[in-house]
Image (cartoon, rainbow, N blue to C red; front, side, top):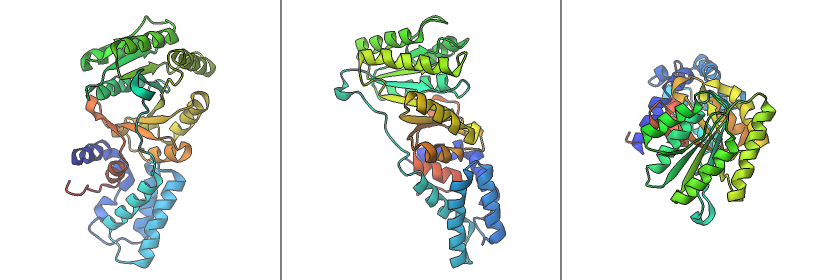
Length: 310
């Protein structure tokens, strides 16, 4: 567990620097009203948004009114407690097929550039690390070099891949991938989908077709409809998530690239708006940097706090 906290702390370093600004320098001293104002500004800078920022700052300000000896570290602990409450319910597990007779299907959706293809391969690797059979379906048949990218990752991570040529019917590839997973007795099928077609309607139509084809094999599939969001986009991710949720019926989110942005606070805004569980977060380039989302580790990482015995 403590290694997990360290991973989050390292991966969220830029967000912590943005959110904390000078707060970490206040850990050993008393704060005043001007320091609280600065905390408010830096939380906005980390893209926590009005509601979350207001709740955190109001709690710190209320404590300051009661205790003029309030130190910076205690202010960070108060902010962390508020944020943890906001994110209550954000952790969840991937859904599995009933009885395990069929593969549990995870369909990853989202726009190009969010890290969807890389995440698909990393997720397949992570699920397979427990000894469970995994098949990866390369259903982004529209984007140039998509097959090459996912093939390279699959080979590097030792994941079984089902693919077809560029321009092929993505739904047919999804069908083949499901049949392969079933034949191999795989527990999981991870499907990477296209992120951009000629129009938004074409994209959503293709996703709907993939869903229909999967349902012919298993009426419950896909068991997980997960959007991959680029954490560096901040609050702009909310609009993307809402569009895909309306069209595809999302069951969860994966937030990528949190290590490369100071706007990791937007994660809270996306969760507040959609109440979709955050299944995994991307904290770096390495395969193991895709981590199951842990609210306490995220909150401690954002506020620069240490886990007990860390």
